[in-house]
Image (cartoon, rainbow, N blue to C red; front, side, top):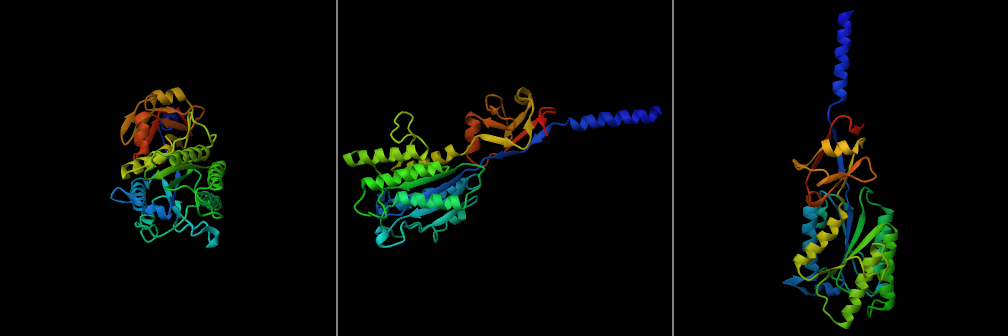
Length: 325
């Protein structure tokens, strides 16, 4: 009798031991959906450094997609018109590459997205944004991250009704309404001007329009100046690249969700081991349990930047009793 009782005791202790192993949680990163909308109007052949605007934008976009294709879903659409409704369809969207991970081979395929300017005339920016938002609503990308539209253009908008002369107040209004509607449908719009924007009366109006597009595209009041949304101007390939990268980096979240719940926030911080590429991160300096959440942490500072920059892998282990299965 005593013997079997002893065995029972041992089994009991063993059982407790097993239940109290440290728990590894599986983190998932939020994956943004980034759609480039690239102006294919005739002015994109204007000189840009030692190439032209079209080729500069093409090369920068392809290289960014190659760098980030494993952590960002990318798609790309180009837009133009040929005399608007007089020569339908309008808008024309010649290159259409759907949003997906590991898309560098598609976006880098010059038969689909040409590296040298393939021809094109006018700039129906507003109607093209509307068309693209409609397509993204018909086939929504995965909802585990934000969907953003990055508009790369070098010209004032026109419309399908009035392709020339541009810009008309109507064309400006159509574009701004399109940015506002995109945001209302859950798709933020970011504006990148390709090429120089000199200081003249005309460009003051252009900057005002870009600022309004940027504000409306993220849900701010059109004429907000304090804490206005940024718009970007790229006059060199380096500037273009850093503008695109900044927009994309801002869309990558430093919040990481776990597959289990954190039951004890203080112990999680004091006793948990969170590592980024094998380097142990400090809590609360490099990470913290997200406020108001029991299954997410936030990375902070350089840990956040490293996480955004690409392939960094995150692991997290918490002692027994901290994590609820």
